[in-house]
Length: 377
Image 1 (cartoon, rainbow, N blue to C red):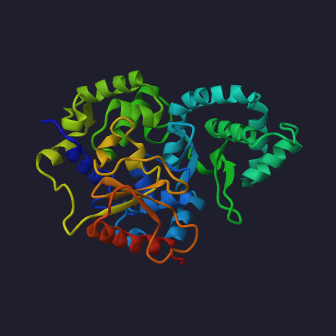
Image 2 (cartoon, rainbow, N blue to C red):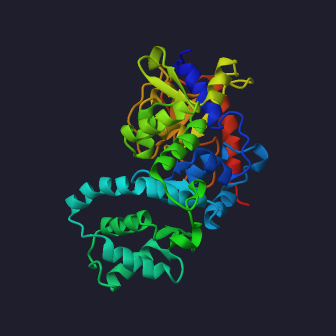
Image 3 (cartoon, one colour):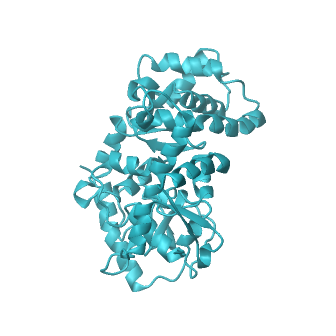
């Protein structure tokens, strides 16, 4: 059986829990997705709550508390960008992907003429050994310790902090007066390599990556996972071959818009499609207000086009309208995250096609949930 874009789109919405949301809390949502791209913390946390059972969603304050108390950690892993990860998964994911992230960063560092990060990493390690530090506090300490000059560009500080994260020296800490902090890595990350046990094995880690990533992504290509994880297709295909022999994956040809591609899924996901799982909930159109980096958008580099709407050509991002509105799983508009309390009438939108009355009604329904998320305790 081949799968077309409509089938894949519906399966992804279900597997990502944007349809039939039933996860019990934010750590469960992060664990389900394995890692969640998280440059913009508040919109990312909002997106995670959309995967939770209605009774478990809480609001922005309760979501931020999960970061503060270390149930969820934020660091640079997989690619040179922020991700939210569970403490139990940070160490093995860093061991697997940090070398490639560091190599990716190297070309930028050469262009800036940045020095080797070693002395800076040692300096920030000494700072957080006595407690949480904000970025500004660490930047000041780097100058006071003679690692950086007073006129050093901000990228030099970022360079050192990212290497300290990749080397398992720093990890996100509790907020201090509304500012994020760093703490010592071992203070928040348990010993060992989570699901891999006490010893890291690269081949086992690649298998674990596939096993954890794929069920939440429904149908995806090797290239999709390569772009998401930063690992090469050669490494991922070797792991896929092992899982194929074990009967843990199914490879399916794409049809129509996906013609020529081979998509990988789990037997459970494919069986649900073959048996005729419902494509969408009844009760009218459904709108999703997604963060720009929501995993439904960022997990699929090669096959992201399944979300395209032929009526809505995709213009470049405009100003602060960076986030995505889906109507029944297709891109329909962009929206801007509210800078303060919710505005009357809901978030500001830039429609990419002429909206119909049912579209506006769908956005109005999800706006009620956004307002509840933003409401103070």
